[in-house]
Image 1: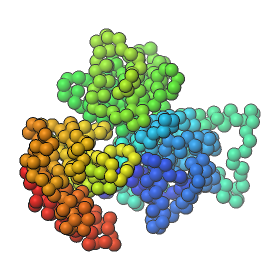
Image 2 (image 1 turned 180 degrees about the vertical axis):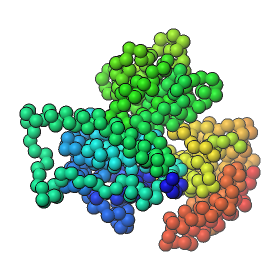
Image 3 (image 1 turned 180 degrees about the horizontal axis):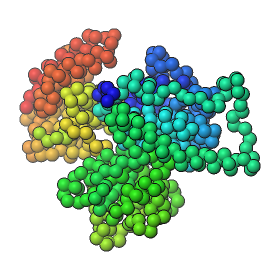
Amino acid sequence: MAKTNIVARTGNEAMAEAMRQINPDVVAAYPITPATEIVQIFAGYVADGLVDTEFVPVESEHSAMSACIGASAAGGRIMTGTSSQGLALMAEMLYIASGLRLPIVMADVNRALSSPINIHCDHSDTMMVKDAGWIQIFSENAQEAYDNMIQAVRIAEEALLPVIVTTDGFIISHCMERIEIIDDKDVKNFVGEKKLGNYLLNVDKPITIGAMDLPDYYFEHKRQHIEAMIESKDIILSVAKEFSGLFGRSYGLFEVYRLEDADCAIVLMGSTVGTAKAVADNLREKGIKAGVLGLRVFRPFPKEEIAQALKNIKAIAVMDRSDSMNAQEGPVCLEVKASLFDDSASPNNVLNYIYGLGGREVRIEDIESVYKGLGEVIKGKSKNKITYLGVRE
Amino acid sequence: MKDLIEIRWHGRGGQGAKTAALLFGDAALASGKFIQAFPEYGPERMGAPVASFNRLSSKPILIHSGVTNPDVVIVLDPTLMESVDVTEGMPEDGVLIINTNKTPEETKKELGVKGRIKVFTVDASTISKETIGRPMPNTPMLGALIRATGILDFKEMIEETKVKLEKKFKSKLEVVEGNLKAIERAYNEVKS
């Protein structure tokens, strides 16, 4: 087992540390709360000569992603970081990055979207770009944020897809926790040198990137993009397996926690996965068979795997930290329900809880009330299909 | 002592409530504990009431919600108690440590502290003025916290804090010395 160092780091510090160890060729970024520290700390590493990175301070997030796209097309290993409105401003360029199959890695600190203006955590920003063709990996805590950043480099470059690694704004980004940091040389070996395919700076093989693609070929290129997303599941799992073998921490498409014999389960992602696990532990002591499915990879969505993991659960609550404003369930719930739909034997007791918008606190009692609701469903009581948890109305 | 200890720091923006939580978290980590240290999330304004938090455990900490029932509460500025209920959510056997020149009995009476909450007082403002040269009550309160609760070993905490402060004040080592002296004095002078 590789040597690790135990340190206290906030989520932002952990992500910046991973970026230092990865030592990307170019970082282009624009500051935004609560992600500012990631690139601020990294800019310090650049100024102190601790990394070889060319840091491009730009005037907006649209430009940040544009610079990342140019540098990635040129052949470099590229990273950036943002949040909320910054991600929104990048949206146009996100599709260009993924369509060009550029393996950029981005740290995204989940924050609510305006308006009303709010700097606190929810998943609206990341969910807004869920269809942008990027792999999306969620982190429960600072340790996972650090580990996910390191794995994301390998995943992106093997899948030829850009990757967003998220943490929850303030809850993780600004919370100092005990984490294990891998030795610099081991991270360097794990991420390795970027393998170059076709790239703009290869003067021996000049190519065009981003050319017009009309009805005769656009669909084929999109089909390849879709296929890359489907195939990236195996890449994510193989990278996780190698990571686990070297550094001891296991990752999958999602984490199952006390789910094997559970009657009721909560499906969710981000920092509240931890709180749900703590509540499940307490309920288990009282004889209630509670479990948690903590989603790590939202894109690609692990459809078959989730259906398999939930097949014996009597009542399921999917917790969404955003709403699609679609007059029905939130985005995670819809995907979970769709996953269960194809198998008629799958459980169909699925409740949706919209929670934590704009940083609304999610207390232990809130999670307990979700499990309580599931208990009532199991007893045959009817419940609202959608509950807005902890809102005054 | 229960396995998960939750601490809430009350202060005003600029008094170092966040720094104190981070320093304490770091020191607890060095003694082998799992820790969390986080500020109350919001816009920071000089002088406005702020809070920060710690969780300590011998096991990995899964909870990521705010601290609502702190076992220990530390008040960096006694004038806060006019507008903030610093005992909110505390259990009956909680520990309340206040930076004031008054005695625990006087403070308990003024606050109307109910139940068996143990009140400790220490004049951290005066201590910091005499040792650091300005009223920075956050570091001395670390000493008072350890004396009042016994959560960490005092020597270990001092050594770890020294390392952290030396990193932070590379060019002003006299600040480090003043802070360490302040912690030690508060450790010795806290009253119960």
